[in-house]
Each structure stands twice: as C-alpha cells, then as structure tokens.
Amino acid sequence: MPAYLIADMDASDPARYEEYKRLAPPAIEKYGGRYLARGGRTEVLEGEWSPKRFVIVEFESMEKVKAFFDSPEYRAARKAREGAGVFRMLAVEGL
Image (cartoon, rainbow, N blue to C red):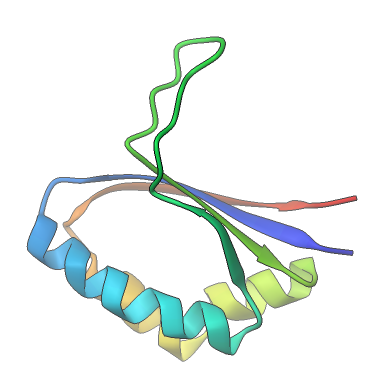
C-alpha cells in the first residue's frame, strides 16, 4: 500500500535550507521515494492554514517512509537543516 510523506516547511535560514535541499533528494530517491509536489504554489481553500513550502513524496509503503526517515542519508540532511526554520512532517498511508 503506498504511503506519503507530507511536509510543511518555513525556512528562516536560506543557506542552511539550501544544504538540506541538496542532501534530501538523493536520500528520497535511494529509498524509492518520488516527489509529487515540491514547493509549488499553494492555495488555501478552507481554514486558517498557510503553508510556506509544501512537499508531498510518495513511497511504496509506510515501512519505506520510515526507513527513509531514519536512514543515515536523511539524518545527515536533517542535521544540515538544524536551526534553518520550522519543519512539520507526517506520514500517511494511501489507499
């Protein structure tokens, strides 16, 4: 069953965030992830939500999402972005 990593990011330190953006895609690819949305225009249709940079990545399963998130490659990307802003992520199973 597919699973999706969904992230909402508000980067306050662009230099650190650029390093994260350099490191994250190869880690995503290594664990079979595929970007579905990556920082494009968003439009709030209902509620008080205003994401700054919204990302959706598809993986083949929840296990793959977790393997990616805890991988040495992605831990390095997360370390590179420390102090770069506010990051919110969740994983959700698809249908």
